[in-house]
Image (tube, rainbow, N blue to C red; front, top):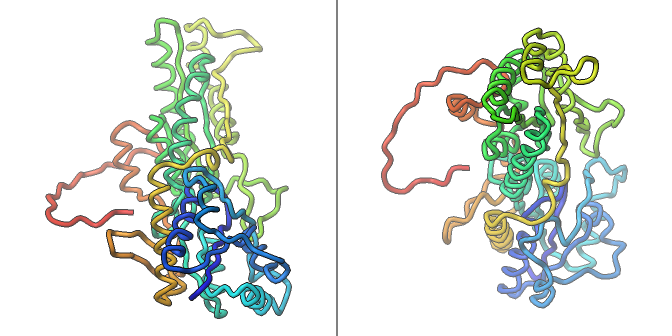
Length: 401
């Protein structure tokens, strides 16, 4: 193997430039030329049309900040299998041959991984450096720690405006049908409630928790000020198990519904209950907030963080993991170990697994949810009784993902 290409695909996030840098640095150390293929799988499909590619020399790598989020190589949401071209794989191979590229390091999530499986099955050598801020692969994925840190920071900051206006603040975050980022970001932000797709929300349970905690804070305050913070994953399901989607937005390139409106839906459910609860009217009057026809119930406001949690800077953990995953992917290519996903690097040992297995969706462990319910966090359900077990461990401990 003399030349390799690097592709980043899917959504942008923290740690991707670290993957690029780690892969290119390892390639350079091994005497292999390394090239960035722009614009994800769109660039791979159109590779035959390029006149030249950017070589990631040591000098060029100096211009790439490993701690910056986003990707120097660029992205697109393209599923190769869906391209209406019967010669698509031959076209890709022709492009790779044109530039003498022998193998690919590709960083992306489950959708990207499904294309890696497809490409491998069609004779194109690929290794997967796992990336998704959703944290729903079987391995750790670059971008998750950066995103969770940003979610927790923004959510914590929103408490100031919530307390100023005595509002219930509902923060909606990415994650599709796995609630890892909402769960971990919410715990770190000291959220009062966290609503995740794994638990269909019982809004009556949530409402009682909101009412009790929110009113108590304001009553205890010497200035009648208080707030209540809810983190909600975009893939939230209602009590009937139905999705909350933007039906007018269609589907993306991989056939996924465009999720939208979970935060606003939560606000609507709370406001509806506030309006018919006489004890809330009494509370508003006792707190000297009540104004008939104008300000009769507490306000609930939804904030969608959206792409703010993808951008900016990467966490130190993601930079470390990204460099290791990128570099390890190159070493796997050199051993002709293809169609696999880097799990982690443990000293000199590179742990990997089949990409087809790695991209199977992993959900939040509900026993962890039950643990935090013991600490008073509401997850939109009646708390589950939990009997803790205690285990003494000794010797080497495997890194948990």
